[in-house]
Length: 183
Image: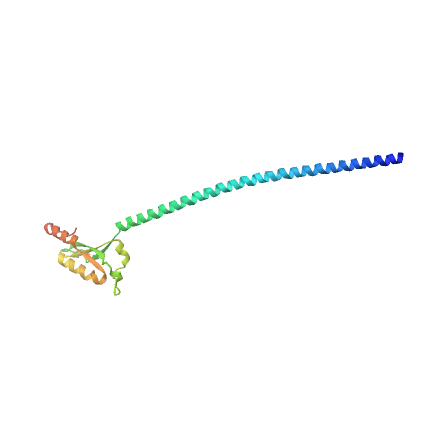
């Protein structure tokens, strides 16, 4: 009985030892799993925080792009307005003759003849781009008739320019009494 008992005790002891070792291994694996789970949860939280920051940055970028589009539109409007103001203040002066004793200055408004560039035989003497601005001819002549003749010889419908002499005529009439024909 002793050997059987010893064998039974050995089997019971071995079984208990096996169960104890197995339980220890399960506890160790459980601790490792919990530690990995904690690490994964911390990494998940960090990734969620980064994802939230990224979404906030994307919203900021979208807001900045919208603001940039508004500013670009404003800049375009302002540059167009500025261009119009500049175009209105620019003036091309075509001077005929020079100031000499006995000559007066007469001013004629010049404009491109309507539809001139559409004609097949159109040959502009002056570049068409300058007609966006104010153009005038300042003519130095002894009297209005000579000034008008000089101006109409250079600027006429054949070269696509119309001459308006109302200003020069008014100036000549006003200057006749004062002795000066410059407006």
